[in-house]
Amino acid sequence: MMKKGLLFVVLLLAMQLVTFGQTRLIVKNGHLWFSSKTPTETIEAHSRQAVSLMEMSNGNIAIEIPIMSFVFPKTLMQEHFNESYMESARLPKAKFSGKIINLNEIRFATNGTYNAIVEGDLTIHGVTKKVKQTGSIVVSAGGTKMKVTSQFKVAPRDYNIVIESRFANNIAALIDVNVDIDFVK
Image (cartoon, rainbow, N blue to C red; front, top):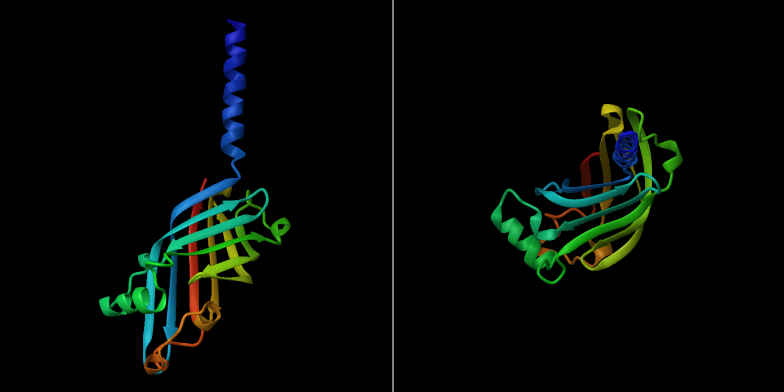
């Protein structure tokens, strides 16, 4: 009887350690959107299909998003984006793989807002570039929830995205990109 009780306590403690020691968080519905603002036109598209991984123990972070998941207010914009610019059938995903380089400044178990610096590889349209970006991690609910946000700019020409000259006034040279991902333990 005592052995069974001891075994139960050991199993219960092991389960708690696994639950509270969880360091890898995965989300399948991260929100990414981008906008292009020119005097001629404002274009914005959203996706809520970003698959994201964050490892709190070592700072690894990865995001992958299907290009066709971006939704535009106008169907024609969406068609041009996928067929003419992003070639989504041939190059179906964009991704980021990198690391939080100031991990020692982030307290994943303590509520608060932490500035994060992330460095890694951003792949868009089949082109990979080294990037370094800033963002924030908001820890809440005693460390069981984390909201990761970032805003940065991307130049289409850096990723071999060719804008036809007749649309050059409609699409900004620098596209604003926003990341908003909610992780829950």
